[in-house]
Length: 329
Image (cartoon, rainbow, N blue to C red; front, side):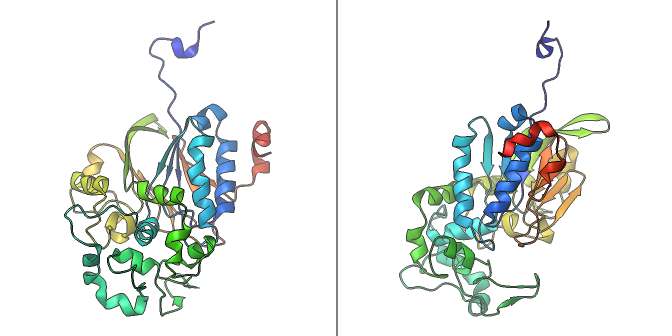
C-alpha cells in the first residue's frame, strides 16, 4: 500500500504553531493551558509544534519563579518542539534590574535613559539603593520601585509594589520587594533565560485554514506590536539588535501606536501576533492574544495555527474527545 506522503504532488501537512499569551506569574494557569494544548492537538503535531511564548511571564501573579522554571524545562521535556521565548516589557524591566540586559552598543550608560522620564521619578518611587542603581536602565528602576499611588485607576486594582506590579516576583524568589537581594536570589539559569529572550521572531511560511483552503503567510511575533509610520525593516533591525539605548521600546510596551498592522505588510499576507494589550483581539491577520492581562480571574489563552482555534486554561477537558482523556494523567 502506498504511503500517502510518497504520492507525487502531495502537499506536506502544515506545521502546528501555538502562540501563548501573557502568563504573568500564574503557574497553575500555565500548566492547565499546556495540558489542554497537549490534549487537544494530535500527539504527532504537538510533539513537533512551533511554540511561541509572547512575553510577560513575570509580575502580578504569585509564581514567577515557577513559571520560569517551567519554561526553562520545556526544551528538554519536548526535544522535538521548537520554542521561542519573546521578551515582554515586564521581562525587559526584570532583566534590567538583575543586570542582564545587553549593553548599549554605542558605549553610553544606562543612566542616560532616565532623563526623558525624570519628572515621574518621585511619583513612581524609582529604585535607588546605593551601589546598585547608579547605572541601571530606567525600566529596571521603575520595575523595582515603590509607587506612591496605591490604586491603579486604569485597571481598577491596587498596585503590587511598583508600576510594574513586581512585588509578587520578588516574593516568589523569597525576597522583600524593592531589595537588591533579588539580584543574588535569581538563579543563574533564570538570568540566562532573561538574557536570551528575543524581541521579535519571524517565520517565512505559516499556514492558516480559510474558506478558500490553506493560506501561506509570513508571521511576525512581537510582544506589543509594530509601530505605524515607521519602515518595518528598520524596526525589525532595531528589535533584532536589542538596542537598549532607548528608555522605552515601543514594540514591547506601546499601546495605540502598535495596535494595527503596518500598511506595508498588507502587500504580502503577514500575520502579526502579540500579547500585552489585556485583550483577545483577532481581526484579519492581526492576532492579539492576551485574554488574561495578569488578572487573577481571567483566562490565559493561546491560538493554534493553522486552525486559528483559541485554547484557554479554563477549557473543560471532560468535553474533549475521549481518545485524548488520558493525556493529563
